[in-house]
Image (cartoon, rainbow, N blue to C red; front, side):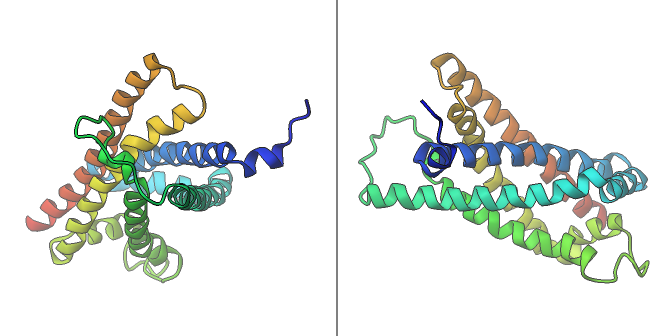
Length: 226
């Protein structure tokens, strides 16, 4: 039987596969992003962070991956929204949930947490990407990328620190279910693996949330002492 790829990707299973694979790609990106940002904490001079940022900016492969990353976000958001719409259209009245169910809140509200994470991501892109690419802050020498990172989380901008910490909690809730769901979609869905994936997902979500929160708290506390 001839495999019809177009038909597969237009099917519900195909859409779930695309959303899962794009989500897993974004999960890997978060690890890389966190690793680079943690350099700003481990090296207070900022040299290690700036070298890593310079490498990411000048590497041709990384430049290509920026477009792949953007495509991954768009696909994940589009298919996540579409599948949520289809599910609610098919079942407009939710099933009654027993008090004894083991279905987590995050798994029932993936679209909600995803939408909130996207909202905070927009703020983050303005605070960092927009100011680097579309203003003269860096090129004019007014500040380095390390200075910009510190300026976001200083005492004068304390609401940003609170918002970012809230964002990381939401991100952890979203990641906790999305990682195990993504692996289950690509076939790791037997009872033995489900238990392992729940633990792996929870540990991963905690590492990401605690890691990024550490950066926020570190620079905020540092600004209090200056």
